[in-house]
Image 1 (cartoon, rainbow, N blue to C red):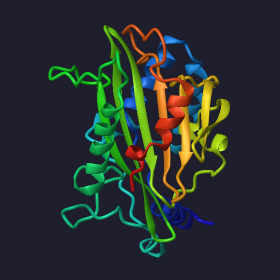
Image 2 (tube, helix red, strand yellow):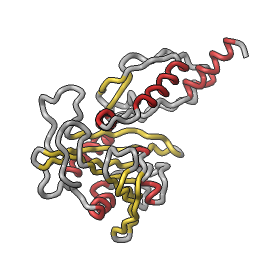
Image 3 (tube, one colour):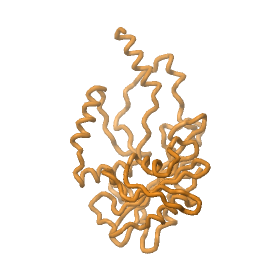
Length: 281
């Protein structure tokens, strides 16, 4: 293979590959802060990342964007190989009749579902806790007290699969923790077995228990493994295929004081996972 053929092949592969999903700013900030505070093995991860960047020959920076984290600068310009032009799928159509800019919906019915999910979270705040609003003067880069996002995940057999993620801070006096709900619409490729499903949440592992809620079997991770961005989380797949994750944490992963205990019991967390309020399509 000569240089021209190699270059054409690389262009073809890059054009046919879907971009990675946009990431939640809340999740990224929480991960980074916990990693810094608890002195995770950042050096090893950074070394691996540096090796990959050296091989690829492209350096990118990450800055907060409207729909999560986006590249700080423009992406490298790649001319698609003629044979690859028809393989790239457009993003879903937005309310303006044009394809979205990326995976994140910033208007329309999908965006509204993310807002609705946040409203439903605040409706289940237990007695003794509050869900404070975002500060008007919140410093740039600080993790918001409330957040919501609707994101296109994939297209399976012609069906668009979406996820909705909303998060609210739960406060008890000056102490703060977090409640997060993530919903994946029908058609997703997530596991059916409850504990296998629970362990797919953000790739986190942990000690899982099966909890029966009515006729439903819910997987609840009651104790996380090394990745402890949350203290407990529940997972349930509705009969129509919609998947709901509900996660709670006793702290925000920063300098603010943590809650003295978790807001919900294991059974209450499992009940929230099957609650119809979070059963979004």
